[in-house]
Amino acid sequence: MSKAVASILFSLMLTASAYGQSAASYIGYEYKGATPDTVMPNGVKHLGGALISDINKDPVYGIAQVSKGRTQMLWLEVSTGQNEKGVTGWRVLDVISFPKPTGPQHAMLPLDPAVECLRSGKTVPYLVALGRIDSRRASYTVQRAWIADIDKKKFTPASIRGLRCIYSEP
Image 1: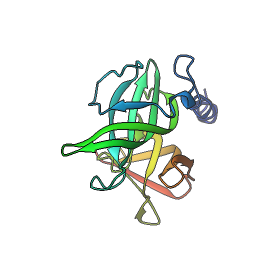
Image 2: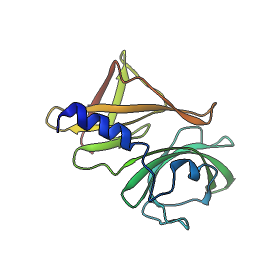
Image 3: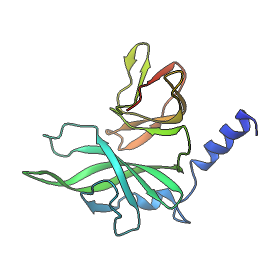
């Protein structure tokens, strides 16, 4: 299969559903804080995430990486409560759905310790991306990208033109 055909298929599969459940059906889902590898009541496994706003301000915004079956998702979330220990719950605002990455494929979240993406020499704030890691060349080739827009409360598509991403092994 050519790279162009594979890229088109990969893009089409980004809208794949999680075992017949559309990604949009998770919008509005609320859950208590979860640690990596926790399976939530809806059968979704939490894989970790990243905070994208100040933890000391209310509400807190974050991105969770989750999976169900062979589908992986990124959830843009807002906190639903906090106590002295931190965030106590989350509500899903928007969802990106895609097949579980294989081999050198990697879903990148903001502040990812393994990948740094720059445009015109500057970090792109709130960038999330799907791409391929080439550890021999210390690079990450972005196939699709979005900005986690907390004002609009959704992921907005971002151009991959001019993105230069560096991969440093964790």
